[in-house]
Image 1: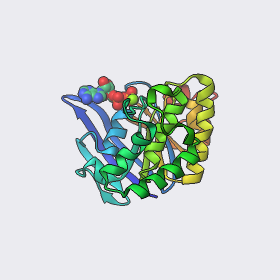
Image 2: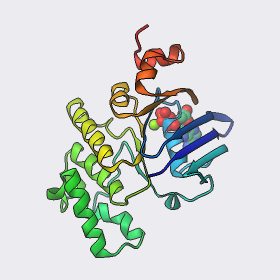
Image 3: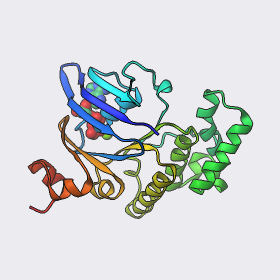
Image 4: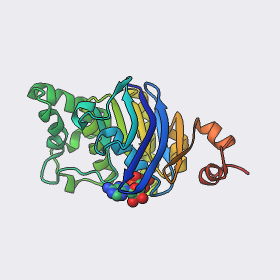
Length: 238
Ligand code: ADP
Ligand code: MG
């Protein structure tokens, strides 16, 4: 488990500043929900933590160690995207082993790891199927499985449930909660669903237009919103 510290982080694309002086930290094992309207910079922030986008200025630290210039593969972070991005021609098993193969993990160890994670996510019967033969919920589980087999330090989720229908979303929400309770990894979870954030997170970061508006427990955010934006966005009583 790892800690995350973000200090005075900024990001510009050309002349446009999309993240402004972000300060945010996550304790070891914490589940942070990152919420805010579309375009406010949530995905950009996750991508910077993962190392997929460069830092314009400021610091990202994992376990106290500055990772600004570290390659994604050296950060030991797993990211699950909204579009599951499974390899369509590979089986579920191959999709899950791919990352382990890249890291040179022995075949026997790979299969043991697949079995462990597949049992946890209840996808063992699906291991020999292709992504095209799976439902949306099953595909999302496989995407999570692929992240889990790497046993990373930290999980980043970018609106993982937004492509699912309402019923499945609620089901998967409680599965993610259980998963976090079992695995206990530090997690940053982007969602635009306030209820999802309230039910899953230990702390919620509310963003608007590249500015972090408030970072606090769900209860505090709901009862003591820092400003009108947070109150409106989180549906606090006024
Ligand atoms: P969110 O995930 O909250 O919807 P994003 O992080 O995707 O928001 O985007 C934040 C802002 O940055 C948006 O205005 C978006 O258009 C812009 N943006 C994101 N990626 C790029 C890029 N590669 N080049 C230029 N602008 C970008
Ligand atoms: Mg996004």
